Length: 440
Image 1 (cartoon, helix red, strand yellow):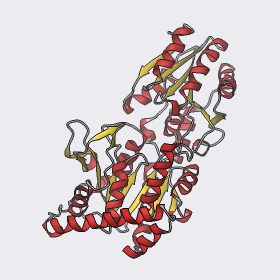
Image 2 (cartoon, rainbow, N blue to C red; image 1 turned 60 degrees about the horizontal axis):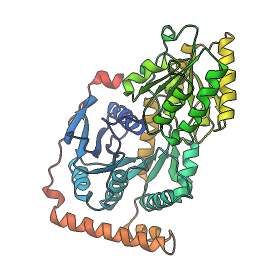
Image 3 (cartoon, one colour; image 1 turned 180 degrees about the vertical axis):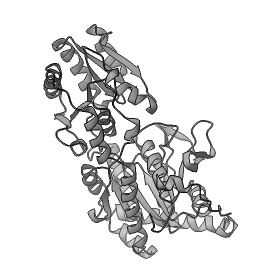
């Protein structure tokens, strides 16, 4: 904690009050970096009436920009129109490192391009896995390749995610690090008194969408409920596949055994988890499934599809893996239920302590800080080197990238001429921490 302190700008379309893995990752990482003495701000788009500058815990400063959202909290991609705002914020806050989050976030990509155009170092964290064959993936991967050609460093949440990102963006593996997510385990403690006596409860907490394997869940529920009369399902989450789950529940007359809770606030997740014995994850693709870590911290047995980075998340004795098909999941779930009925119980507090040792936000912040140190110590590229690097991306794509990069720098020069940096007020640096927080 005695090294150089940085002014860091986190950027993403996904942040509080919206709830999700990326949102929680940015918030928790920012809190830990603040506690380590760094200055951290967050830039995102406006959420309803929440616009302008707001402050969260530990005086985490958040800029809610007046930018329109067009699909699932993603801003309209414009590439150039956000440059004046991002440039003003970076100069006002004297930003050293801009850290973007989420391959689905246009605001993140644009901010990285603008930061590099004005000479600020940039880091990108990828939280997702993408395909290579469908039309949307091809377009997304090409844009990601353009954005990350001049990136200083990339962070992925699992080794599977690293391989995926390296291939998609044609990156040198040496500039890609693996730093997983973490969990505040103090918020996910076990409580065996809340379990339903004489019943086995399977908990599912997920968005009810195709990517989360809701087709598989719809096939599993009637089979398991027919085989085991003492098993109930407790499902938290919402999405367009909720109708399918409701149809299965009504068709097989399982209204009292399959409970749909709807969307949950993050503060409610633990209260649902501690009612269960088994946590079931049916995802078809996952870079890193934070939900299974939260469930393990609450002392549940974990069953999950063997996809993406899931096998890397927990040791083999803490998770049962199945192929992403109904028969395999039913077999693994059958075995777990029979063991529970036979008296086999896990030590929930021992498992909680193991998860606490494996996943800690302060460890994640320390590793991220080392990435920042590496980035700042590295030699920055000149404009000519950037042009040459983009040109080598391909005979056609290279020319397009060079044209876009040149146009971006031209726009940046015009904006600088219209609003010189000397006319932008600098925010005075004030410490918002006390010694007691640092010691904690």
